[in-house]
Length: 389
Image (cartoon, rainbow, N blue to C red; front, side, top):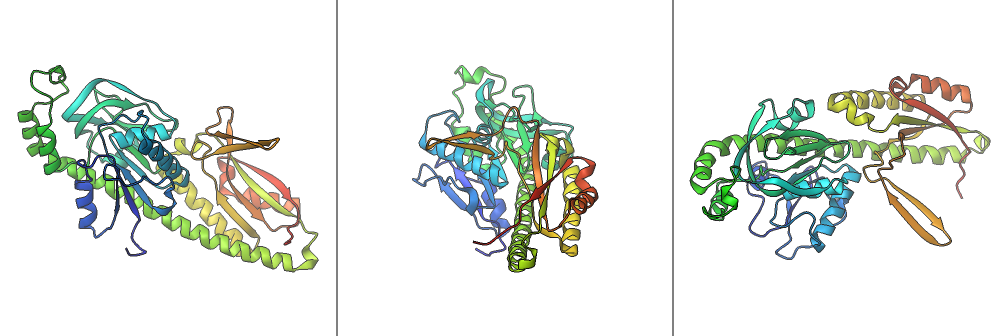
């Protein structure tokens, strides 16, 4: 695989329910991917660090089942969220993503099997993921549904299932199947409930003839929607990789700068200052994608200005405590861990700048230039001198 290619993992719970159109779409673009086929004996990884994008497909089990692979899948998606590795959840995959984010999965009021129409929410995130058309075809096969995770935006729903899709950060959870192709749908038609069964009596369950006719009519539109979703998913993965490369380069420069500072013994008594970006919990989601991108661009320019002046030792932005945050205590040799989100927290530290300046007034002057001062609070802390042991 080329180093320029994204490292894509597809988690496949059922051997006969493969990536279908997702695989076709990736192959058409010359992109490699790894399939973790659970029923074939593949072990689900729990560390998302080896991947740039993760997709989880559907399956016949419940997201609430006590299955070893599901425990590992929950751990994998929690780790992906903590690392901002974009996750795409299809049906069961969307439910597992919701659970990884702290939401519950419960029985839907009615089963949905076959083609349905979903309504796109009137929200920028919904348009980013689903496009400009407000009524969309969606192929369904589910009996349960997810609640919305804290901080997530509902981007689609219908009368049968209120929460058809949610977006949060670079992640998308769907209750429907965008990965379907003609072969998968032909198999599903052969497995539809018997016409005289209680399931078939639901208006939200199609018969074979109706599903076949709708497949011929709606599948091309569904795959156009899927292509747009997959495009955005991998674009977000590429954006994360670019940011990681920049952060790595900045970290290497900061380490070199710290070594240089330590070697200058005449500066051993000098003090550094840290600027902590204190923002209200949930503010990032409220800004939306466009507002977040503009804020990020302003902060990048500020960082570059500090570097040009030679006063920046290190900087970084921090994820929300809901995305991988954990609190640790050690008492009498016993370790206690509490996973975020932390209900009592009204504010969070969104990032920091460690500055090589000697006086409080210098630090205040630089903090006043920080764009985040327009929408957050900048807390200025004095840091003791650094020594290499």
